[in-house]
Image (cartoon, rainbow over all chains, first blue to last red; front, side, top):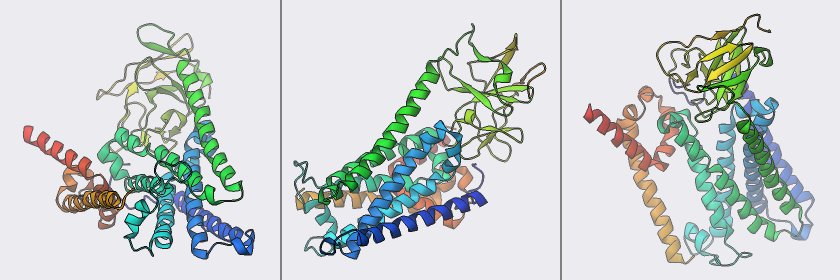
Length: 352
Length: 75
């Protein structure tokens, strides 16, 4: 949270996460190199540098695919949520792998040219009007630049400077990068392969990313279309308190504005914006820890009565008024940003 | 892409990054506190970590700094 900047806000979990990431990358690269040597006939066997540059490229693609799968998978099942906690390190690692791939490509394919290697990279294949012979390197280069910008702005400093919305918009460029990488691979490495395995793996990866995004999008659309507007004067029907697990929330969608997370903390009912100030995480999918609503993505916390992060942190989200009538919770769709606490509604004989 | 065009692309990119490096250096030395008050006591290692971002996003950084300056002047 925005209080004092450190290189990395290390926690034991993050250390384990990064160790697993490092091991995963090493195992992937090793397996790729061994498989490349073991399953290629001696006559077709690539040189070690060619194998290495392909291994780095494949690892970057695999990691980027994983990065894009984690977000929607975490929306589908909380079992995947811990993978979100340190996703930025995945992104930085992905950029590092892509940079290693690009560096070896530049060295091996353009380093011995009479031209400047950078100029050679863009000018050695001028068939921009052809599909099969398209200079796919330029697509990879643009994707690499996008990954660089994302890696360079992954620190929380940038989230605070740019604001969550602009930061999020900037990092949505990852989808453009992924699209460019898929075409880069399909027009590049896949064209030179006799086996269809490469194309199949890339196709399955990209297809999975598309599928989970469509599934989550459809679920969100169904949720937004649900009749949360059942009362007059801006009050939205939430449901009986005992339908909300203790410390958890139900998310409702007002006709305008952000979704609202209605939490039950014992007998107290609070309503708070569903959008975390950090990276737009879904607060309503988090839980109440130490009396604070805790974002499931990175653990940002907010007091449910006033939406403020506990001192010394300074983030703040909107809170909403609630009432209970005939055993049903209602929340008002207008956010409250005043200095006074919004008192919770209290359930009579609330379920625990 | 013709060689000349490729050279122009790299020249433009290099020029953009050169200006970015200048803006990043000046911001780290003189403008960080204005850009983000919470960064006034930022350790050197973190300053170096954010330098590539300042270089890449220098137009945004400059716009933000000038906007903040204008706000201060109005007060």
